[in-house]
Image (cartoon, rainbow, N blue to C red; front, side, top):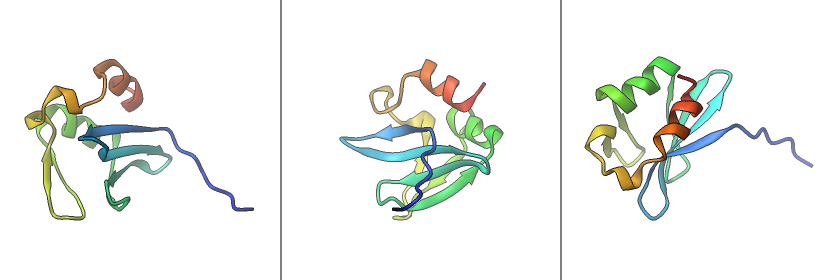
Length: 87
């Protein structure tokens, strides 16, 4: 029996499957890409910067993701996202 921690998570971008997900941990928001690789750990402020102000996240395939340039239909519901981030 293994002890697996389950953290609250949200899909930040989903193109027929999650491309970027955020896990809420005690150390911050762990960002995971579609290959299940950890690509960043962001503070609440940094996650806010990604969502609202143009902070870029680079995934394990070296693709650059700029939230505000992506279509609304690949993003989560704004109310759920704001609640998740804790703003």
